[in-house]
Image 1: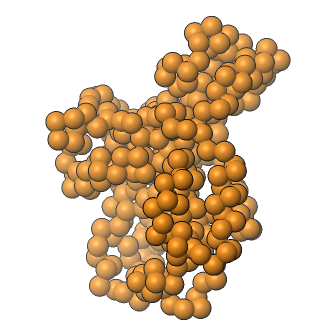
Image 2 (image 1 turned 180 degrees about the vertical axis):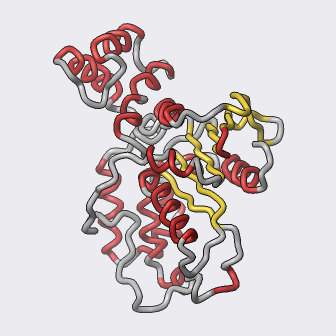
Length: 300
């Protein structure tokens, strides 16, 4: 794309994404850095990367969940202490029956919570199936414009169904400049894609990037129970960076929007208060403000 539009080559480039792309972003950033060092064309003006609620490492991600649930008052002290004692704080690969039972007891208590946001209603599978069936009925335009239909989406993640309708609408594709015939049916989640998952952990990629001087912004919605800020902060600590600006609130207007900490090697961590998985869906203004300040090299 940059070869076809060379006027954009000098623009600052940030590799960014959320959720599962947390496994891909640091590796992709390193690959672009490698191409720059080799002088390959096009030469990118790479400045840094952003990872939100990032899937990073199964051990860190999983081990952060139970302490998070306890800290948010969703698991009793007794259940938590039982799990911590029997599992030694390691919940991703239970090593004994008592640990397995303790983890299962916590899962039994929390299984009906939303995996996206602890304060939001859980989204039953039936929401997806009943809404998706209508896509084949030739009434997607009516659905997209129907206030009554839209009001039925009580679960935020169920709204993903709307993106399939939106992305396949001819008017939308024309306005986006999509060339006719270049794609078939667009899907937000293409479950039929042949894919080999060969990156089990992105921590080493972050560690290598920390020596390159690129700016990094890692952020977490503090109501995300799946990829918790607890687990994310654990793998950041594993990088052994020095804290240069310790834990403090950051603001939008006169309201606390979250908390942040800045490390050596130009890495910034931030929570987004009240946001789930993924943060910009729940707190768009706060996230936009965070991005703008960070890319301007201003304190959050």
